[in-house]
Image (tube, rainbow, N blue to C red; front, side):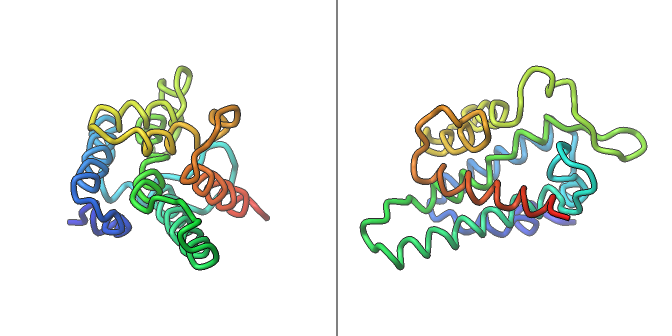
Length: 178
């Protein structure tokens, strides 16, 4: 049986063991609330806002997280101590930014993924923050979750949210490119 740690090895990039445990708890909570299994994470489309996208939810989460880590490294190499990106905040935020989709989406009996009733009230940045807050995830990580999508466009994003926002939309735009 697959475990979340095997499916999302980037969890090991979070150096603070307490934060890593909280991120894992949020994922487990989201899966339970949404009725998803670890195996089904590889079957969920990463977006329902575009047609014929062949990228899965878990591929998107992992890819964007790795893009964030690479961007952080480039900034550190270029600017040294002047680069003020907190690694654990960046990685935890990257891994949790879309976790709200686990309740924003639901699976039909025929296996098709569709928007759940939650979607008519709250999008995944809001539900993701609520789940993460419930598990004691620190405010800087909540900020990344809350501001990563268009809902955060009128809010001053912190460095980790800026990195994630651009990595996320790069992957979104390229995944839809035909």
